Picture 1 (cartoon, helix red, strand yellow):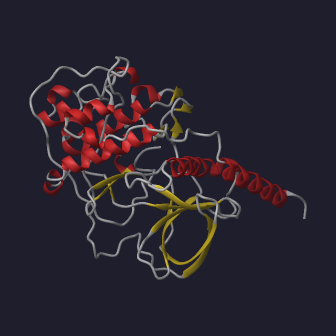
Picture 2 (tube, rainbow, N blue to C red; picture 1 turned 60 degrees about the horizontal axis):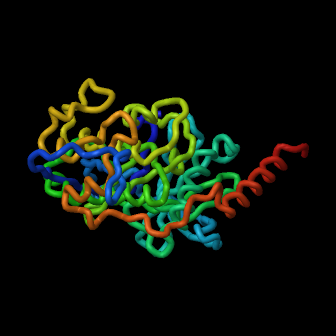
Picture 3 (cartoon, rainbow, N blue to C red; picture 1 turned 90 degrees about the vertical axis):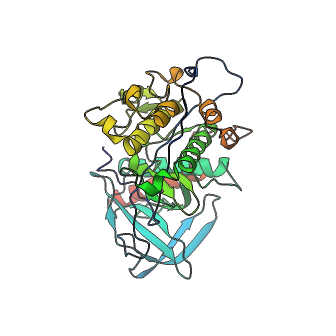
Length: 362
C-alpha cells in the first residue's frame, strides 16, 4: 500500500509550516546502543496542503442528520445526533468508508471510519480493530491528559453490521513542499513532532507508517499530530513489513521484523527531507545523502538514517541539541501495553457470535 492509496484521513482544518536551524558541525551522535546519561531517539516531518478556511471541502458535513451510538474509550455508552459528510473510500482494496461527523449543536468535527455493510469479517475488520486496540491503549496511558500530538479514538462500535471508529483529528496532511509561511514555523513544527514521537515511545507504541499523509499540522495551535494507527504495533512485537516501503526504514521492509521506535525515526526523517529539501530524494528510494542537505537538515538528521535501529541516535539527545530538551516526554510510570483491551475482547466475541448467527440456516 502506498501513500497514494492509503488516505491519511486528515481533518478539514488548514495548516502551515516551518524554518531551518543550524548551526555548524558537531561530533557525530552516538547510536542507541551506546550508553548515555539520558536516552531515547529522534524525528520529524513537515510541509502541507493549505486549504482555504471558508471553501467547502470534501469533508463538509452537509448530509442528513443521523443517530450514532457508540462506546467511549472508558466503556460508557453514548449517542449523538449528527450531520455527516459524504462517504469517501478507505484504503484501496478494503471495504472501508470514511466520512466527517459533526454532532448537532456543536462545531467540532470527527472522522468516522467504518466497514461497509455486509462486508464485515474478522479479516476485513482487522486494521480497524488494530487501530482501536492501539487507540484504547493510548487513552489508558494518557488518561486525563491526552496529548494533542496524537490522533485520538473518541468512540467505537464493533457490535453492529458496520463496525466503526470515531476519531478526533486536527490539522492538514503533510503532502508537499513547504511554502514560505511554513518556513517561519519549522521550529515549532519540528519540536512538536519530536515530542509526538517521544510520547509514542514512552507508551511503547510504534506507528510503522509515518509518511506525509499521516502527519498533520494545526497552524492555530502550532501542533503536529500523528494519525492513522491501523498498522501500529507495540514496541518489541513481531510485525509484517511496513505498509509503504518508500517511507519505511530498511529493517521494516523485511517480511517479518520486530517493531522498534527507531523505524518511526527513520521514516520521519525522510518525510522532513521530502518537504524541505525534496530534490535530494529525486531518484532515491532510501536514505538521502546527508552531505547534500542544507545545513539545518544535515545537522538535525545526523545519524537518523543509519542502517540498524541500535545505531540511530536517541530522541532526547537530538532535542537537547536543538534546545528543545524540555519538550521531551519522559517515560514516567505509564501503563504498559496489554494483549487486548477487555472491552475490545468482549466486543470481538460478540461480533463473532452475531456474524456466525447470520451465516447459519434461516
